[in-house]
Length: 64
Image (cartoon, rainbow, N blue to C red; front, side):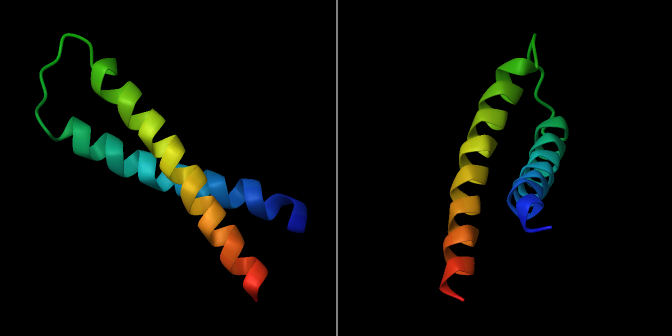
């Protein structure tokens, strides 16, 4: 199970934050000709945030 903890943790973080981002963008009443102008930067930012958070969680788990 230890082999799956890292990818599972990243998947949960990315899924949760992505869902919140989609809810925020879809409820913001943006009227863009192509919504990917809002989605692409959001998903890239969320990916970077996910990697950063995963490293923070991983560093804390090594301290225990």
